[in-house]
Length: 525
Image 1 (cartoon, helix red, strand yellow):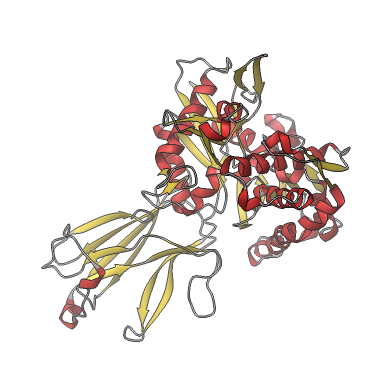
Image 2 (image 1 turned 30 degrees about the horizontal axis):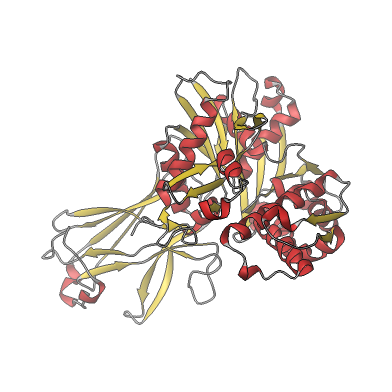
């Protein structure tokens, strides 16, 4: 059987395979007029061909969008991973490509299937072997995002044998880097590292203690709306100002091509030799002279965007959880920078200014560190102790129904069960005051002073459950049918919540009198 680590990224997806203690990056090829072109990344890009109604993925999508007349023939969807943060069952994406959009799960499954086929055709694996995979996702990914990612990769033919948060996977790769693959040295390794993971669509950082083959996440944090996509958008706007382009007047494909060009120019800065960023309008189907943006001017625009990430890093290493674990900024063994956006020299410069005594370690392969860690996890004995990064709870009534408050079921920082272990279970029992329960679930990074879901609040679909035993358990329910029922005070309702090792939560609501119950996947409609 073949084992791989998969880093499903916003801009690019990377797959690393496990091969008898070695971890080569799987190449992905596409046939062109000059021959077969092979790259270490599979672009997280989708092109929809209007005439045939079919999708092209990855390198094939990238290539077709460069063809003459592509604007008429294709629509493009990029950064699908970012869209998953707002996923609810039945959700749709790509509304700019086609009215009504496309089913998110079907599109993601198509992407994962194309990735699987590319992996099998790479020449590194036996095409007949079962493809076992450890999949990564952001540490601050919500339950719906985790569920849909795991489910779609399974439906695409990957045997998902594990999942791991992206910063934790990078910590595994960092540990392997320190011992240079020496398993004896790995069993003796002891270190505390902060992983600063700045990718194309997400920013996460995790404080991880490494002790032999055990990786314990002490605390984790992130900025939900921050990633390389945002830095690309700044550069695209600067190009537009230079060339006096009206961005709103561009076609959808032209806008996407401009953003992709901005991304490529941004990444060129990491070479250390680039002083100016250039756009030739004809490269994206426009007319006009060349636009030039000096790198220092670009960095001036980026500082306010990157500052929240550095502040989040500082809060993390000074958090209550860090202090309780005996960690302080001057006791860190390293701040490990991974993710494509961390290659910008400005990022390291701003972190070094905030942590002048810290040891900054720059990955020489920031695009592959996470997938490498996942591949090591797939093949070797690695013990993970991870945490839930967000509060999960429900709105309850207080003051005789006059006030709502957020009641956490699983608080942020709750230790997740080990992979393959039994789920965490919480049970809540109460007497109802209405004929139908209206349960509204939220995930959030914090709770405000009024007891309401605060930063990063994400509301899931409402759950309606018949408290009244006279109402059929599977009958159609509507919020307008809810009435106060003092006579139900003697009844008993039990809610049982289960959180698995991936942080995916389900609830079973049960009427004690007749034993009738229903199980809900909380992120679905």
